[in-house]
Length: 480
Image (cartoon, rainbow, N blue to C red; front, side, top):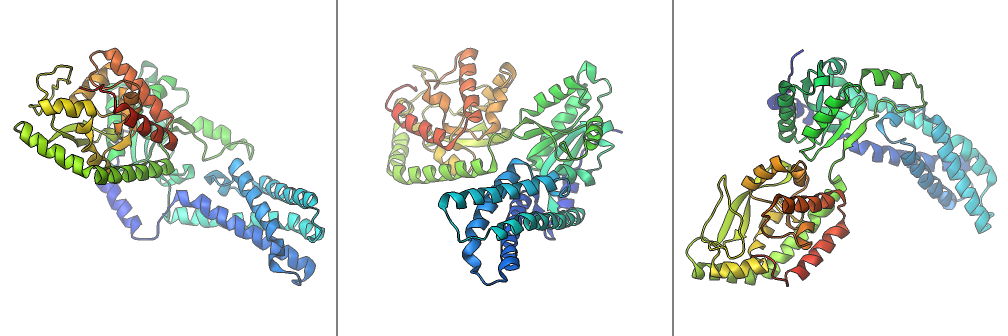
């Protein structure tokens, strides 16, 4: 079997046919089933009440029981992975957990009623509910599993978009049509020849992994799915190291031998959905939404509030020296995508070549007005336009010239990891004194260390703190 790649045109054609019908993402399944479970529990309480009281009492009388039981069940379901694909497709195997979750809900209700000295609820209704609810939930889960199988077979449900990278021997046993058993939708596949993996990856395999990286960008895949022999530890390490340059999750799935072992563990162990996360996504979907909203708000308010200053600076630049108002230079952003950064021109040169000299103190290329703009960082304000366009963020690793990126990619092993998030107008390194020229490799390594710490520890509060520190730092003339 030779190395092959699903061509982007073919993938687009397949996806185009699928989009003409109803198509749901796998991410909506768990919330939908949780809602169905809640309705089932509400129905179970009502049916239990009718069985005992014959429908005579108020329908809303037992709403408190329903609410407590639902919250307890959903918490337990999330903890015991009842909403993962493997849990949804095996309702009988998870029957004990379903019954135990209901029992914990009923126990919580009983304790609350005792503490509140509430005597209006019937103990008989609680007993009926404790036996009836699990049976109803299991029947509901059986129906859900049947519907999911039908939907998956019909191509109605899609999993996470992934590029599969694996040993050709492993991939022979995993048809792309069956990959939803792992909760993924394959948009491309790269096969490696790991017969001599003890000696490391061959040049051909390294070239194939670079193809996988390109394919993931074209198809906007969210992760790489690795199907490699678990005994090939060196190959796994080398493949992972090459893929880590991109901001996608990397998951290692069981090989043929491990799947065989797991399949013999009956109902006691992880099943089809089992995988090992070798690299998480830098930011979750929710985090990215929150960060983008923060960026748009700050950039919009900033451009409106600073518009008189921006207009005045533009006029002064034209009066101070010949040349354009703005300086635009190529930068590498998120996932290595190049963009043109906006800055007020502060020099009498417009360098954007393979070799670019960093500005330094007393640099003769800097104009008279440029020195003032650089000291106050006003020259960076036009980058709010890059933020609005989605090319940059308010906070993130500062983007360097492409020529400098190429140099430091080779010198610093983790330098490329800075591009796992969007570059920022300001960053953690900048508020910790690592601004301006980096004349030594050690200085750049310190900056990279701060940038990676920021990426690994991102929070909304951290962004707000860095913005506040930046405003304070602007009063100190550190740049040049």
